[in-house]
Structure formats: structure tokens, C-alpha cells
Length: 639
Image 1 (cartoon, rainbow, N blue to C red):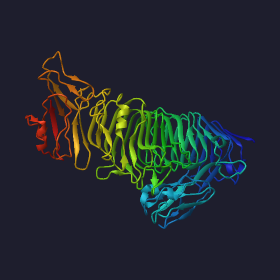
Image 2 (image 1 turned 45 degrees about the vertical axis):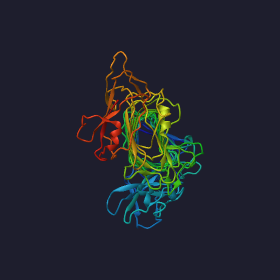
Image 3 (image 1 turned 120 degrees about the vertical axis):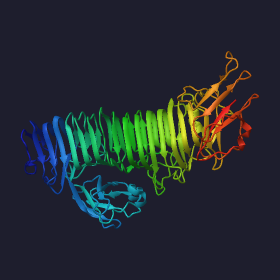
Image 4 (image 1 turned 180 degrees about the horizontal axis):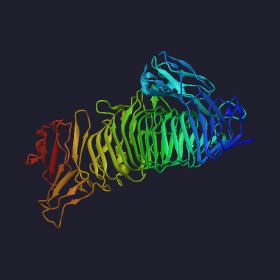
């Protein structure tokens, strides 16, 4: 096959290019394609040494180009590969069910855009289901999760749902796509996109130091190897099928990039500085991130659906963070498995809408074997806040959270007291930890409200207590049958729900309990328990209370046994604990339970909002006290 070598600008591709020819671009030349090549024409190897290979679709109605499998484009340090298209309007929705629109090409597209209403000029991304069915994403009742379209292989028709299975575009809303599509092709069948399963069989686009710049284009079944790319601005772009982006890229900039297919991923990318603003970044496909980055943001990802072709023992997560640092994912919709985080740190997952099922039917794994919303392994400083559950979520999986070897985990604002996350007919473990799996530190669970879950947090505590530090649980509502561990090193439980767990009436002697003192737990709709553990504080700033020890004989002082008890050895010895926060939700006291092996006087004082009275009372009198559920109380306990 001959080679075209150009040192000057070149535009007349339709008239002279022979299918499969090699193109070499040198000396700053611009090689432009702005007209539709003849049917059956496909591009071979392209070497951009110094110059630009430009696909310009801004002045044509539509443009579809094919690149030959087993060939590749190499864009070197002074080279640029640029694709620029525009929008193509398919038509206007009439608001009826099962609408069909004609496409300008039959190669697969990743998505279309649908106007939110008549004349709004605001468009939502509706992803192509590819081999999925409308029933697997629901319809109008699922909100944006039902925003889907469907184009089958080789078809030039785009279909929409009926409102139950797939949403209906609003009446009068415009529907548009990109007018430019680039695909790889089987050289034996020119003009037909390749869907071969091995990426080495596809057309490869490599940028060893060069620049790729995509805008308003669909890239279908093309292997992207952007090793040492100088820059990768990809905007308003759809990537279809098993397309991959891999390599070392600096900087990386995505804006409204839609992935569709069973294997869309970004992997093995090392980034020293990057800011990602990805809107609708994944549609109907597994998405993997393996980034060594210092900063990144993913916003507005929707319809993230794991593939259905899963073996019973496999655990496939929709979004995988591998070796990532300083990453934020915000305002996204997850349907299927959730997040896997491995060897990552400083990951912030916010404002997530999540479901593993549609109309009670699981989207991926079996009911008896699967993953979880969040799986964390060997990671640090992970935060998941403002989790919401989509309609029909059933969560027939192992647990909501699984974690191994974690330093720093924050879960907060999951549901609300008046609107808890409801997991319907398939009870779900809230937290699960494999035994003997390394160090746990800095665990914070705040404002988490769930229904129809089950839990054994005693396993959580028994696993981590020998090595844990700084465990904080505040306003956790997951049911009354759950076992909450009230022991742990520097552990705080405020407003827990369930049962306090002890070992034969006390705390195991091999557990450190420094800095763990008061706890309060609700065990039914009308009753609860407040408690105190006689433990030595490790740090005043971390201690839940302040206490005073007054030994009568300084040479024979008070001794803490590390198991929630204290030895007062001499007459006159005493110890006082003062709760550092107001306990809410109670109106009075029904009694007390003291674990004491000697004759000690236990006294209390209450602060109901106006300070402590300064008068000590016998603990048996506490049943006569009334307190405000909303104002709360603090207590002092002296022995």
C-alpha cells in the first residue's frame, strides 16, 4: 500500500485517497478531512510527526469515517489529532410511547441528548442501552435513571421507551446527536464497524507525547493508547463499546464524556496534575479508574450499569478506583454494583443516588452472592456522604459496606430520620468486615438512617478493637435488633440504635479502652440506655469526658484495668466523669444497672440546660428525674 507524505496542508481527501494508504504528516502540515469519503474507504496507518490530522465536521450535515483494524495512528510530540463536529437534530418528541427516530448512520452511538422541555435549550444525556433492555433501567418512575434510548447493531433507528420500561421524552422536546462518528472497521467488510473482542484487533490511536482533542464526536470500538500524551481535552464526546483509554497523560481534561458498553474504562494512567469535570461520564457500562493522580473530579455520572455477564463468584463493581489519590465523585446515579476502592486515598464520594434493582429485579449479581455499595481495601481517608436510594432498591447483596485494612472512613448523611433509606424486602447488612484483616483507624459514621437492614456490629468491633483508634458513631438508625459494640479505643457512640454488646457482663480484658467513656443507645421506640465505662483517657482533646481522680494514698493510686472498670483501692478514693455532650430523645429514667464488686456510693448530677445543680444525689434517685427530649441533658457520675 502506498504512503502519502505531506509537508503542506492537504484537504482533498475524498478525491484522491486510496483505502488503507499510510499517511505521514510533517513540517506543521494540516491534513484535513471535511467531506464524506466514498463508500468502503477506510484509513490505514497515520503518523503525525509534526502537524495536525483534522477531522472537521462543522460544515457538513453528517460525517462517518472508518479506520482499518490492525492499523494505528501515532501522534508524536509536535503532533495533534483533532476531531470537531457539531449537533445534528433528529427531530421533536410528540410525547408518545415507543417513539422511533432515524439516524444519519448505522454505526452505534453512545447516547443522544433530549431537551428537558419545550424551548428550554437545556439537554439531558440519554444513554444507548446497546444489548440491555428498557426493562433493566425502569421508566419515568426511576427519574433520570430511566433516561435511555436503544440502537441495535447495524440499525439506523433510535428507539425510546414507553414510560414503564424506558422513559418517554417530553412532548415538544428536541432530540439531537453528534454529526460525526469515527469507528474501526473490519478490512474484510469495508464500511462496517468492527466489534471484535480483542483490543489488539482494533484500530489503535496512540499519542506518545502528542495531543488529542475531541469535540462533538462518537468514537466507536477504537482502542485508545494515549501513552505520554501531552494533553487530552475530550469534550462532548461519546465512546462506544469496549473502547479504552490507557497510558500516562498530562493533563487530562474531560467534560461531558459518555461511555457506553460493557468494558469502557480508563486504566493505568499516571497523572501528576489533573482536574476532571466529567458530566454523564458513564452510561450502561462498567467504568474503571486506575489513576495515580493528585486531584480529580467526576460530576454528574449517570446510568452506571455493570454488565450482566457475571459468574456467580465474581464481584464486578461499576466504578473502580485503583491507586487513586485526591479524587471526588459527586452528584452521580449508580445502578448495579457500587464502588471498589483499592490502594487509594483521599476519595470523596458525595450526593450519590443508588439502586441495585429495577422494579425489584436485580440488575446484575445473584441475590445470594455479590458485592456491596462500597468495598474498600488497603485505603485511607475515604468519605461517602449524602447517599440516597432510588425507587425499587432491594439490595440483595452481602452488605452495604465491606472494608479491609482501612485508615480513615467517614459515612454521613445517608437518608434522614423522617425518610430513611428503605431496602424493602431484602434485608441488607449495613457493615461487614472480614476477620483478622489488619489495622482500622479513624472510623466515623454519622447521620445514617436505614430501614430493613440487618447488622452485627459486634463483629465490626471484635475484628478491629485490638488495633482500632478513634471510632465515632453518631445518630445511627438501622434497627433495634442490631448489636452495637460499646467498647473500643477512643470510641464514641451518640444516638445509636440497637443493643449494647458486652462479654459476660464486662469488656474483654485484652481490649484497649482509653478515651471511651459515655454512650447512649435506643433499643426500642420508647426505651433506650445511657452508659459509662470506667476507662482512662488517652488524650484530653480526644476524650469524651473530663474526670477527676483523688486517691487518698498517692502511692497506691486508682488503677484502670483496660476493660471498662476501675479499682478504687483506698477509703476516700473517688472518680468523676462529666459527659461532654447533651443526650437527646429521652424524657426520663426507669432505673439503673451498676457493675460493682465493692461497697461504693454512686452519685449523679444533671445539667438540663441551665448548668449542673452542684448537688450530688444517690444514683437510685435518678428514676425521679424528668428531662426534655429536645433540650437533652448532661450527666456527671461520681464513685
